[in-house]
Image (cartoon, rainbow, N blue to C red):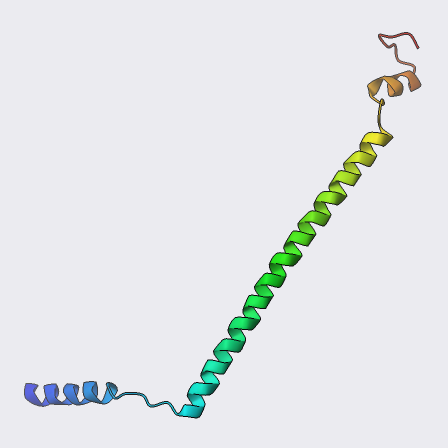
Length: 94
């Protein structure tokens, strides 16, 4: 009985080792699809990198302008002018 089982297992192994035959048309289509996917994904990646750098530059410029505007608007304004408005005593004469 053990011999029969071994023969049967060997038959399954030899059946699963058969080479896979792919036709010429299928192989050409596979190569074409792989090339199109590669080019497309490369373009998407490069576009994403470009958009990321543009966004980073725009955000940096925006933050610089906001900081500059805030600095110009509040130049020389510290706690002293607000204290004077409220009538608090200050260290300097008004």
